[in-house]
Image 1: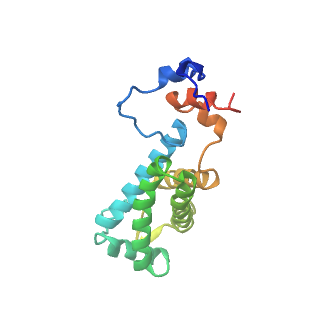
Image 2: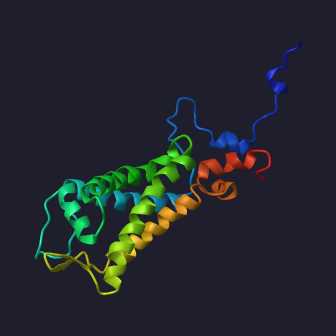
Image 3: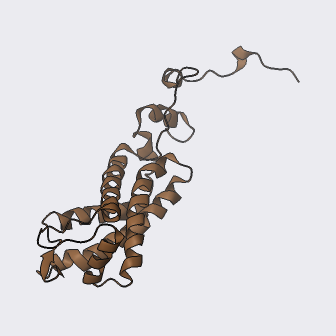
Length: 203
C-alpha cells in the first residue's frame, strides 16, 4: 500500500493552529462547565466548605454572645438537638463532612473524569442538607419562632435565610443540570470555542 506524503494530508484550520499551544507548553486543565456556572460553583463551594469547617473545628455563628457552644461536632450536635434533628451527634459529623467534602467537590468535579456524575454526587447531599436547614431553622425564623438555646434565640441573623436559599438553588441547579448544553459550552472558554466549532455537527 502506497503511503501518502505529508503534503497530501488535509491541513488543519488556521484558527486551530493559532490557538494550539506550542510544543512543550504547559496546558492548564479546562473545566467541562461554563464560566458563569463555574462562578456559581465557586460561590457555593466556598460557603459550604467554610460553614462545614467552622462546624467541625470551631462553632456555628449563633448571632448572640448570651450563649455559646463547645467547639466541634459535639457543640453542633447540641444545636441540632435543640432544633429537633434525630441522632444529633451522628448527623453533626455527617453534615460537617458533607459540607466540606462536597463543597470542594462542586469546584473540582468539572476538571475530573465523569464530571456530570461527580457533580450530582456532590450536589445532592448538599441539597438535602440545605433543605433540612431551611425547614428546621429558616422557616422558623420567618415565622418568628427562632431556635432557642437555654431560652435565648439563636441563628436568627437577617442574612442567613437568603444565603441558605441561594445555596439551595445552586445545589438544585447542579442536581438538575450538572453540565451545560453543548451549544453553551462552545462559547464558554476562549480556547475551547474554536476547537468545538471545528468538530462535525458543531457549526
